[in-house]
Image (cartoon, rainbow, N blue to C red; front, side, top):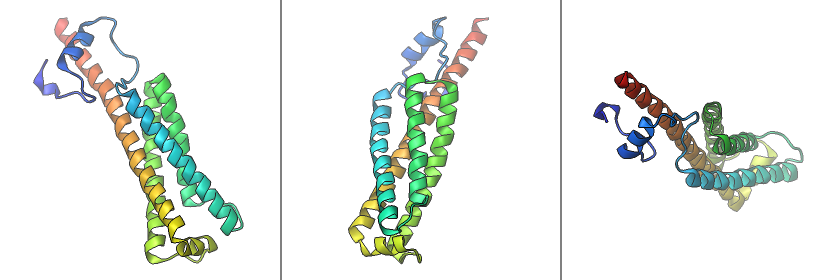
Length: 187
């Protein structure tokens, strides 16, 4: 194999690649997720954290703000929930459309989560804005620490999902590139 192509992501060996490229029926029509176990574990862990964040945010808003509205943490949780559902679809169907959709959803989710985490940490460090909910959270250190921890872990896991999805998509495109090169040399 030409060394100028570089190393393939997801631990592809040259032997496996050359076997799959030389096979006429081996052209993939979908991204190759060769680590579905780690993808599934990350999805489930993130799903638990996302649901925990949404429930905690909803309880805080309902109980202490006496009204329900879409706070940044709640919005980030909902965006993450949609992203996780898309990731489960990607794991099930593994089509290019899902891969690109999940990449976009992951990017939006990362932005939403970092914004919510940044805001939560700022409130924790520098004091609340003038809302009742933020004042209550400032007084309840344990609850606020749990909220910050949930947000940070959610950011880390969503970022890991983004990396796994990028690796899967890049593997597919790299494989197509190798296939085109080998087809060109065969003619």
